[in-house]
Image (cartoon, rainbow, N blue to C red; front, side, top):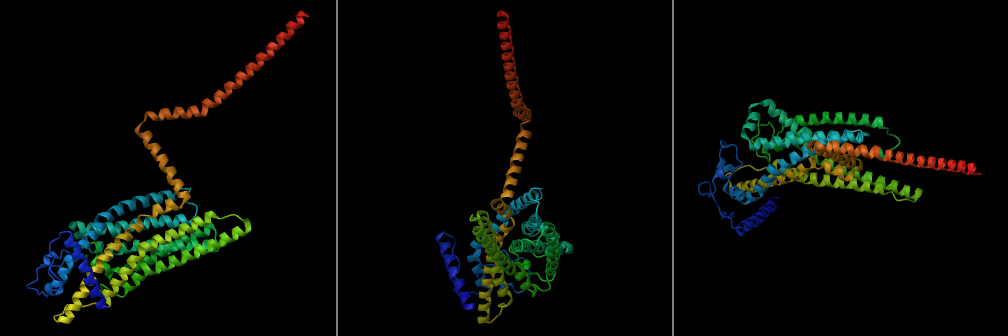
Length: 451
């Protein structure tokens, strides 16, 4: 494993050096040169991620080879930092806005007709909680030192942040699992579920899920995990007793692998069952069930999107956990042991920023649900379109008040002018007919008189 890590490091380093030289970057010292603490050309201050300047033996903890590797890795780190700071900030604003709109749309009488709306509204609230308490607070703590000082000085705020940042993210993940298997039960057992029972069971499931998520989140008070080495690069507000405890294995499994497994199995069962119903319907009626096929395609698309966003972070977190717990190395004076430590630390730095990249990709999971609902749900799309048209009409009338009287006049014309015109035509016809009858009677009288 270590030999594979060394080869990967050498290949990555050579590629980065070739890119930097081709771009005209300044020369970087060679990794093959043997350096010591006195002759190292890279000072410790170039490692801008070190927040504990008073740690003992920093020259041994951060050997010169690791500092040179950091210079080679810095272009990739700058890209990830930009994504986590600015693009994630855009995701937070976009996600909070669209989730709020989704919650409002799903609360209307047109869409609030099943337990599906209950799950989706709870998911919108949980996604907003994850965007605010996890990602927005993380960016604020890393970009504004005075905000991080508030958490450093207050034990209550520190512990509250540790719990809430995991509570909402964990709840959002398992709400998707609950929603998937609720649909599976409804499709497989359509005659054994009622609307009232579904709503009651959905409330019970969500309440149980919140309680379990809160209990699991309390373990972050004792096991720091990724928070002590956050990709947002803020100073952790408290030292955990066990940074990588046994609970981290359970946390990674419950937040990534088990949800992926349950969602994949649930969607496969759902698609198989719906295709089975399609075949039965074709045999009985001879018509194609296009609506069911579209629903199957929608479910498959939602499953693939969630898989693409969650699977990479699950892989990287598992590798990093294995690297930091099982294959952990410590600084040593011996040459061979020190080489192993250097290779381990370089791999650890690479895994951390790979985690930052896939973590940023996972952020989109909390902001794209509105687009998925709009693209796959006809009732949701019609409700949004109707609301947008009414809001645009309201803005136009508010901006141009004179249009109100014009619009009312046009409306009155459309309602009353046409019927009055029809009535006028009827009166004219009746008048013509009466005139005709009068003329006929007059002619008869004249004729009789003549006779």
